[in-house]
Length: 328
Image: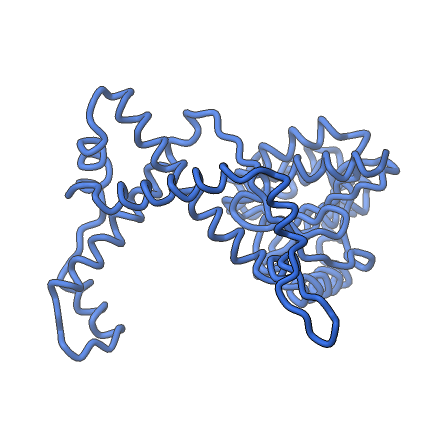
């Protein structure tokens, strides 16, 4: 199978990016202030329209960026292995993609309510989907080999009132810049993000007040252990040791081992682990976040601005820097 589709998409995206780059910043600013309608002498600007479609525009840009990153990584891997791009795709994606079975085809036709049981088209569609999944998997596994920094971010962030959110400090200072880390110890994306977050905690320890909010489908012992540790002034210690030992969380007694390691009063820790008032606080937090359209982890709130999505942790520092500059 050749890369006709990938090449076509890549070519179109290249033309789009090239055309966009040709426009100067001054022209863009003028266009954003352009008025496109007047109703009862009230003007409607292009900027107002763009603010309404900002989430969709960002999603399109991010999808295009991911496609270009994927293409770049595949090309580099092909070069490193001294083979053509087509041969790399054949070797790592097409041959290693999940095979489509007759059962898969039957289920697809049944679930799609297709009257004419076109097995050939179903086979082609499912094969294409499996190859896409394999490509994503392969590219993700290669990303650590390359220096990748993503700074693309939405032009507009949703806002949330953080006044009544229940949280714990990860850093102690009086900074006006507050960053809430909405996370879950059992979430693989949160575990991956934590490596970058530790760097930010260290770098901005005196300038940014980082706060932690636990958010999950249900509240497990890891959340209760952190809450119990917080009552002895060691929330950050428990937070860190849990993230450092996520592979051990299936062991029931592990939290007591953690408590001993960070020097907690074990009897008090056991009692506080059973505190139901903590659960009520966590549940109220969850309700507040969901009511503000926050459903996934990790999500970040920087001075009331919600940063979410796959690459939020990548552009988090850029947003922090902007907010710190506003403080000056």
